[in-house]
Amino acid sequence: MICKMFKNEGITGFYKGLLPSLLMTTNPIIQFTLYEILRKKILNYGELTRGGIVLISIISKLITTFITYPMLTIKTLFQANETKTDQQVFEVISNILKTDGSFGLYKGKQLIYYITIKCLGMYSKLFQNLLNAVILMVVHEKILKFFAKYFIK
Image (cartoon, rainbow, N blue to C red):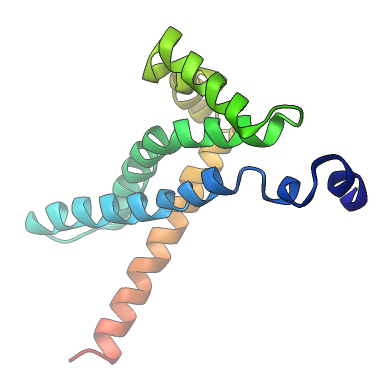
């Protein structure tokens, strides 16, 4: 496969979709930022409970998914189009934006359907991402409490 890729696309074939992949690193940045903003708002009203952690984890992940979904669409377009050049992929993106507007980038998997039906049906990638976000933030909170108790005085 490596030889075939190199023969057909050259060294640049190995880096197809690199820029969109780098843009996707914004996903956890946005998620943690939103989580911390919501966390501080809740802490202003009292103690952060497990339910509060779960709720703000889910909210921050849903908002992050909505914000970064177009980048995932673009990344997929770059990686899936073996015969197209980067310029042609940009033309595809441009055509989507011209014909459908910015919400055209959400059409790929019909994000609203994805969130409402599959998430509630508990069998989608989004549900897995939400569960991962909850686990991540619960562990994050436990580690914060541990360090605050034993190391920060």
